[in-house]
Length: 249
Ligand code: G3H
Image 1: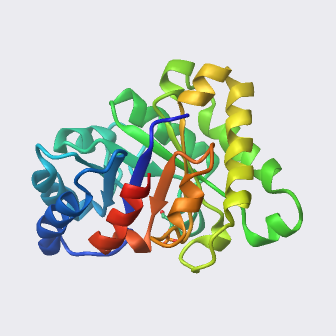
Image 2: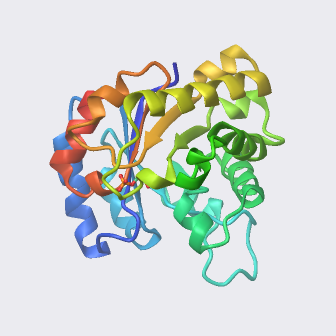
């Protein structure tokens, strides 16, 4: 299916002063991994992360961006700024940003288009709440998120996008989706993408699972046919744990 990508999402953890050494640790620990290894860091850690990762197999990502090119947007960071720094990936639509920072399907779409225009790889997050899962509307909800995120994106560009399926109830809770639950939704996303584009495009898109993925449960999840990697929160903060996951992919 899509290229295997394991991306760490540090969230609001680690200091700029810790970043250079930690990225070096990740480089050492993940050597020999067959997947693409990515560390997404807070904006203030990106210069150190990019510097440390130079010439290595580890790629660096940001956790957010603004969809406008430039202007009076106090506190925001543009795609061009990230690109200029040497960043390769950028996360958008994470459920934490949807909950606390007014991220919507519309801003996710604008951000994805801007990232692609500037040569960054978007990691587009989607996922249902526990209430939605219990109401049996998981796939309906995900279908809305995916259709809106990909609106106006060509098949060629869509192939570059990474989708991260993150059930909200599994994030940071230690409560992972079972291998089958995760596969069912990731397979459903693949089908949606096939309907939006075509089979070749859908196959080329990396679909990650995220939500309490850790060294113990990663092998089962990553063995599923429609799970092409992971977006890792807590377990990306310890290089040894993160490396177990990158080596399972
Ligand atoms: O972006 C990563 C996800 O929110 C998963 O976080 O691995 O700490 O559950 P977690």
